[in-house]
Image (tube, rainbow, N blue to C red):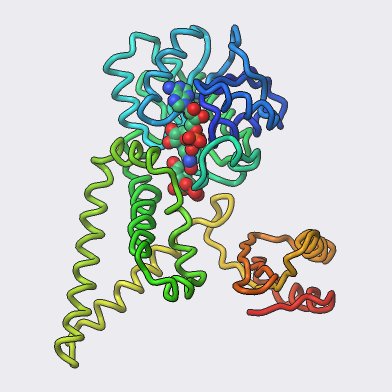
Length: 358
Ligand SMILES: NC(=O)c1ccc[n+]([C@@H]2O[C@H](COP(=O)([O-])OP(=O)(O)OC[C@H]3O[C@@H](n4cnc5c(N)ncnc54)[C@H](O)[C@@H]3O)[C@@H](O)[C@H]2O)c1
Ligand SMILES: O=C(O)C(=O)C[C@]1(C(=O)O)C=C[C@@H](O)C=C1
């Protein structure tokens, strides 16, 4: 398949790398010649203006995506065009309002995978493997165009789901956009914390704030582009926060605090219920992995040795998290495996001389 990628940042370059890997003929374009050249240098394809691409993937920022889609539909009158912006309704309504081009060849889409970093340097060919990629046909999209975009998404290793743009926007408000805001707002509380307090940061704050490092310009566009779906979720969250604050004040004012502890317990228990619904890898039912923390010397080859020891034991590493030790030249590798092999893994690792903790 001949694929032209417009916008060679994190997502465009990752898509181009994934498609190049499966043998597609990928061309690249970006208003920044450096961004395009960098993507090409990373092996994502060649910088060129193709004559007859089969598909054009627009991976530009959300506020220009509709214009870029429209231009692509006009420039390549036989090509199917998809955009991968994080909001879908706003782009579709812009296209319906002003596009004179043939919208039967347009199909919106959105890979539910990314990073808190921008640009081609952060791109990865396997970014979409096992992740969901939403395909949002426009009312006029031809079935053949929808199939082509779904095939492209699947060939990156993603699991494809189809849904209308408004349903997509309501869903991502809750599973992506409000979580980003929550992470940013929690992280913002740390700005003026004394050094001694910030030094106590453990895994909890790291887990909750990873995406707070995201790009403000991109997220301003995403949040404003999906404002209608996000605002009611934020209202509900604000109500929950007020209820918790009120319960805490009741406990302070009155040692009895009738009912207040119930409010706190309910907040945590409801969180457990919500968290347990998040699907596991490859969209499968949630899997509780067993986790061991392995002390890894901070020196070349240590991690490779750990992975080899796990692989040699015939055990699949389901997930991995790395943390650098404070004040020591060690790393902490949290290795996650299926519970059924957890004890065997610990035995194998200890036999090979690794220090393993719960
Ligand atoms: N970052 C994520 O996690 C993520 C995940 C899924 C989808 N998306 C969506 O993918 C798109 C790209 O995001 P990203 O994270 O790769 O951003 P990025 O900043 O890494 O890359 C954006 C690229 O678009 C280029 N660009 C700017 N204006 C353009 C224009 N008018 N025409 C063509 N290209 C233009 C920039 O030069 C840059 O190379 C956005 O629409 C975003 O909503 C992002
Ligand atoms: O994992 C991350 O860092 C992301 O930013 C991923 C994430 C998400 O919320 O899941 C963020 C925005 C995109 O539109 C899609 C994916």
